[in-house]
Image 1 (cartoon, rainbow, N blue to C red):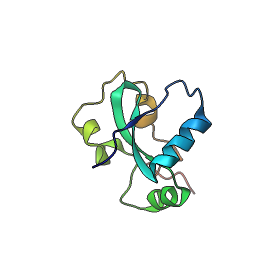
Image 2 (tube, one colour; image 1 turned 30 degrees about the horizontal axis):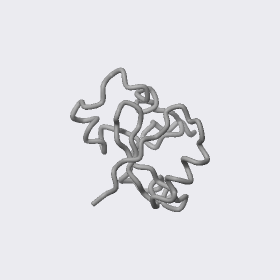
Image 3 (cartoon, helix red, strand yellow; image 1 turned 90 degrees about the horizontal axis):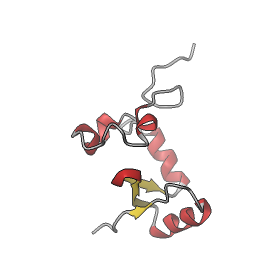
Image 4 (spheres, rainbow, N blue to C red; image 1 turned 120 degrees about the vertical axis):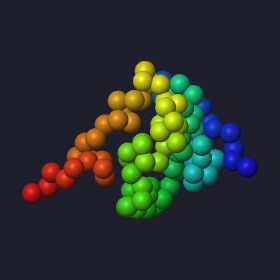
Length: 98
């Protein structure tokens, strides 16, 4: 059974303490984002690198996020702009390299 999601401080009042707490929960742990949206926190750089290099993983929320596909994420969710962004740094963005 997974631990209950850790509710992140939306103000970022003590980022270092919160990061230490998340690391203490394990390499991968569920978190609750603002608005009650759940996600995963990856706490080891080697895992982050593996995920970013894996072609099966995408920043496109429609591919991997069931709540997004089901319409459970409201349009006024505070992190929507970040979730919908497609930029040069996202793996799903069109290539601009020449």
